[in-house]
Image (cartoon, rainbow, N blue to C red; front, side, top):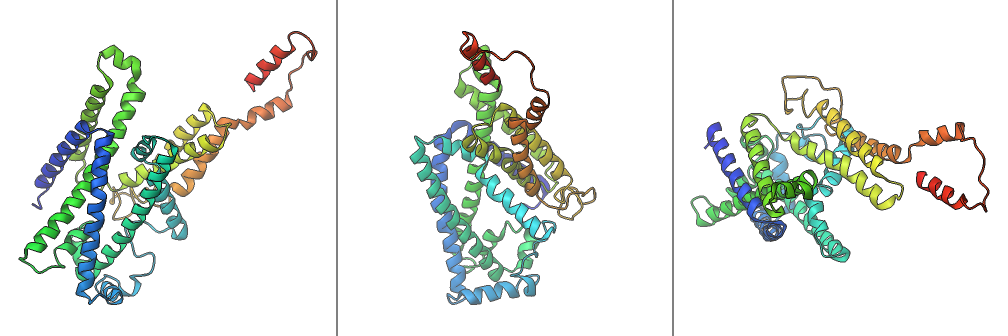
Length: 386
């Protein structure tokens, strides 16, 4: 169904399914689906890659050579800089992208919520260790699947279906087995189900984390007591409200390439959450003022740099390709926004200008006698002020 109306209808139906899943399942339910999805995804990617490798007589070198020959640029296929969807910037642009992807993915709110739901610190550490191993294995399989798709299908056909290349696993699954065979249909169905489960669990987890924030932070106990509804009911109502707003926005902007929203969310997590977590664990002087400076300052800077970046204008893959107000050369703002957030958190907590003012203008007055009755009280007050 290639028409826009059919795609919007399918997107809305998927949104309804995500709403029902996020509203019915709690954190334990979403975790269970995530656990089921991981082995299915790993096994499916491994099966597709092995079937593609069999077509080249189990020779990885032959597969890689075929991927280079069928690419749009055989001479530069294995060299950096061929990916046109992100702007240049050279090594600095690559470093900024890696900062955003690594730190942003690790600091996404729904992942932190899942880790904090552990029974104790050892359990959280074990879960993180398992997650790191599985994530590394998944990315290795994803890389090999990409090479296999380029070798079997060809970069030209993949780009004709989807310029982002997200349809490569489905196209690979449709080519590694003979046509009109039952195994081909089963393999295509498995790959499609894995992709759907990935979308379902990821969006449901984000929606659940957002609903928890709305229920706990915006409403609070007094707000829930005022409306006379328990926390589970408010949580489900928050899920429905958030999903309804998301579906309205999706249908309104479905013609725009909104992949930059993913980059923007990762940039926000890397800029606002990562410095706050590091300061909270490692610096005893980090206080509420520093947190506010870090969050609001990092949020404002990240939003401004993203609006002025090539992800929004200035390139043919931007959100507004016909406009050009590209002032920031990097595709992601992590290289600038993350250090700036650390600096803002330190300035808000330490306030070095106040120390300079106290040194320049010391408080004049009689010095209390150390053994006087009120000396300890005054010293305690001074310590609290400090």
